[in-house]
Image 1: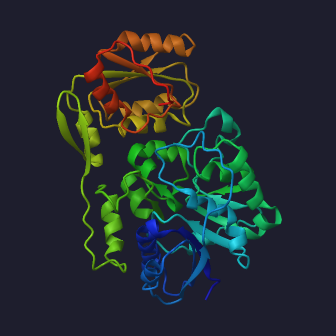
Image 2: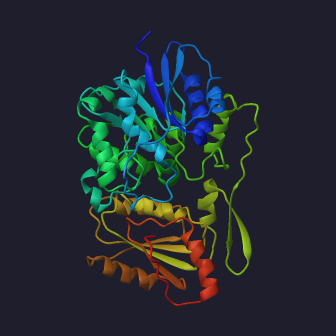
Image 3: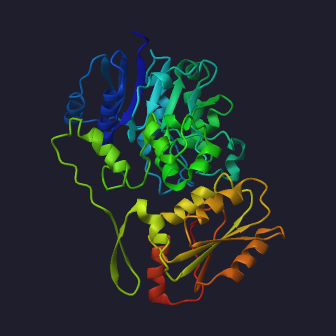
Amino acid sequence: MDEAINIVFICDDGYVLPTTVAITSIIHNKNNDTAININIIGRNLNKTNRELIDQIKAKNVIVNYIDVQDTLNLSVNNTHLLSNIPANSSALLKFNIPKLLPNIDKVLYLDGDIIVQNDLSVLYGWNISEVYGAAVKDIGIGIPKELAKLKGNYFNSGVMLLNLKKMREDNISEKLCKYRENGYNRFMDQDAFSWVFYGKTLFLPIKFNLLYSVYKYDTYETIADNYRVEGCKTKKELLNNATIVHLCSREKPWKYYVPTFSDLFKKYYALSPYKNNELILPDITYVHKASELKKLIVDYTSSIEQHKKNLKPFISIIIPVYNAHDYIQHCLGSIYAQKQENIELILVDNNSEDDSKKIIESYARSDKRISIFEEKKSGAGNARNLGLSKASAPYVLFLDADDLLADNILSFFVEFEAKVKSDIYLSLIHI
């Protein structure tokens, strides 16, 4: 039998259910002779939940607990933290993994919101002796100017193969904490890892961390252009062949019915210690008011079809696009996540030298609300003026390609507009 695979999760009482299902998926899909040591860093994990996890039994699988009472005592600056990202301060315990597992030199860190579909031996076998870790790039999130050096080197920290020995030798835990206190952070821990690991990261094929957001928002062509894709020619093949599927949506598929992903989660839920408890998942329901109270049921897999409806636009969203490869998809994703459907998107390419135009054209092919224009005169102002001349809605919203819309901000505007009836609205927050 080969060396055991060391895995570590961080879990509190609020994340026991998905973590237990994740562990179930690991065990169900491992080879019979694969030995696995699962280490659970439990933050105030109560006895009942611990006993629930202990019900998982399998050959060559050992579950260890590392109990912690609180997260790290850091003076963190959350000024730039994104409000719509589902993470809490327990994630900061990742910084301390080299110290919490002092006798382990190599470990696979996994977020609790993952499903494993294949044996993990291939992933664990990657040689990381000369780097701090291996991970899959996170391109869709975009790179602000404060993190410009990370362009092309930014990764998702939900799945990381870590060289704990080298991290201890180079005092990486301390460096991660220092960056989290003083650096530019949009995420609880991800910016810190990408910054501190810079130049010492091995980038993995996307099959080892297929993000829900990438699968939902990106075309296969966009995925193939930006990530390492192996043996797949369609998004369906990509999902079916993924070793790890990362359920990193705001609408968690164990709380709401998220097509495809809730079905995948329920498959392993039925094999877990929770199997005798029926998992009832409501549709994603939003309530908003324009002239009267309405209920809107959002089925994310049919959202493109909804967008094809001939709805008269109430808001024209104008976005100048110049070399926006790293962030335009996330910008559009934040728009697609809005409740408000009756909008038009006017995208103005401003002499982009990268593949920005190709990306936005892939969206336009499946969404009739999107119009693409070209402005040869350089400058965002010229691009906005062209977009303004093409707008047909009574209200116009200007966005930059690296902006993100806050949750439900368009519906909030519609409600507010119905009461106020003004000509101009200003926001005092970044939207």
